[in-house]
Image (tube, rainbow over all chains, first blue to last red):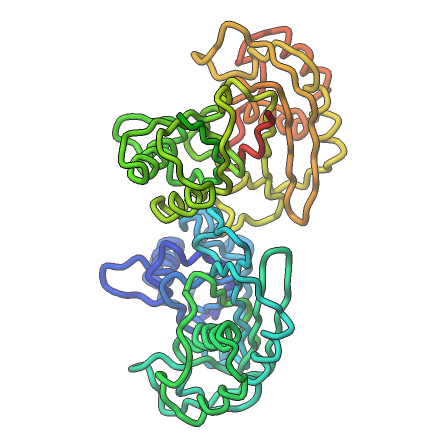
Amino acid sequence: MYNIKCTVEYDGTCFAGWQIQKNARTVQREIEKAISKMYKTHIKITGSGRTDSGVHALNQVFNYHAMAFIPEASITAGLNSLISDDIVIKNTEYASADFHARKSAISKTYEYIILNTAKPSAFYRNHCWHINDYIYPDALTKILELFEGTHDFSSFCKKRSMVDNPVRTINSTNIRQIGDFLKIEINADGFLHNMVRNIVGTALHVYRKKLNPEIIKNMFIAKDRSAAGPTAPAKGLYLKKVYY
Amino acid sequence: MYNIKCTVEYDGTCFAGWQIQKNARTVQREIEKAISKMYKTHIKITGSGRTDSGVHALNQVFNYHAMAFIPEASITAGLNSLISDDIVIKNTEYASADFHARKSAISKTYEYIILNTAKPSAFYRNHCWHINDYIYPDALTKILELFEGTHDFSSFCKKRSMVDNPVRTINSTNIRQIGDFLKIEINADGFLHNMVRNIVGTALHVYRKKLNPEIIKNMFIAKDRSAAGPTAPAKGLYLKKVYY
């Protein structure tokens, strides 16, 4: 039994997220359809994690098991020819038997993209969050740094999605200003549901309302979603890299 | 009677082009709907020219006449609030009575974007032409320069769209390599139907088939569409600027 690891890019705009659901176009379903067609048998895939409706991926990772051997490059090319063009398989490799796209992951990096211009863009309307008042990256950096480290992220998790252990460790945050774009990167050992969007939404809320950044410490203590700021839109979020 | 000049950006992906047609979503129709709603009377607009289905615009220009006075910034903001987000009004100004978006135009610049990478991109699938074999910009520049000057462009015009006078003057061609993208700019006093797409398609054909670039001179002489190369896809084409 071969264990195959694939890296995939997708534009989340026209998907109801990653995970298979009834009567919905999802990334997992589209990929499973293509793989099952290629191997001529039903094959299920395991993603490194779910992404929500409208969220994009630059390098999502999934694995699957198959009896038949197909060369790596032929899997990549074959799947890309079978799949719709808002999904692109970027790389395929044979992994060790114990590799598991979700359980083997050590950390993940998400990127959140803000378009910081006076007018919105017709071209980036589904691919970033447009904010028209100018954001000073240095000030936002200082706010984001308060999220670094090990915390109980209950206040930054979607209600009703709470898990047994809401403690996660953010290893790094980083903001780059590239032309009209602000790109916020967050690397953590794991993410709760909506965690990046809630952190970005809260950081921007603190910045724009000129609140004392120390308020974030109180948000952590509250362990209640309503204590933190709003959720940033899904369309600005990208799963950038999964580390194993 | 006021004469108003607007500059507009649009993502052509979900439009059947600029010009109003029966039972089709077109840019002109969407804008006229919004303007008519704002002025509470039916208003027609005049574009600098048509763009085909799937073709984008960074700075298309149109004008219209109205009896009521509305400040420029309010027109821009008002239209953007009424219009779908794949159209963005970038600027509005009151023009002299004799300004005509099409007839007053002296020249136009179109940009054609090629994504030159081994793998396609899920994100740019509707916004450039993906070519996976590496293109040397300098070699392509030499081919494109042969299109400069005043020529009969019959061989580069869509069949059945021929006009009385197929002579146009290309003032400049230019290629920039920006990361993985090749951006081809062509400025001319006017363009025949599909002219940019036919020039780009032919230039790439000559380049990739390693033909002698001098063959382009024969294509001009032939005055027959079938003498030239294929038509580049609409999705890579942008109306970049109209000069008055």
